[in-house]
Image (cartoon, rainbow, N blue to C red; front, side, top):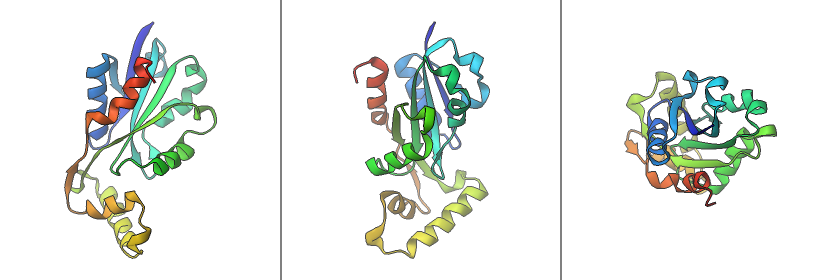
Length: 177
């Protein structure tokens, strides 16, 4: 049996960057989620899914949802990547929204990604602008961390990727957590 594989789904590149760093650190094979099948991953003991956070969903998580019955004997973990700074409450909300039912025991990790409106699709850029306008109407004292980030990043090119976000996941992979 092979040691591990990293599946990733990246829209703008930050998630792919984390997947590549994980591959370098662990020596695991690495493949895009859409280019893999259940048969491709069954020979592995550990499966790490890396997916961007979009509208509270984790990209690529459908692979685990669809195949969880066949993956029960595997060591699974999810790394989600978003633009917001790390926030315990936000991560708990992501978990509650995405890792339900048979997925609820899968460890969830977070890494901060990047922001570049020029790379965004027209739809994503428009949705972000509408959300920014909506947030700007609120009392700043009520802003959640993601709201502050969304307003501050407007018109900026930001890259918050950092290998340090991988430390907790690496501890799990190495069995030291």
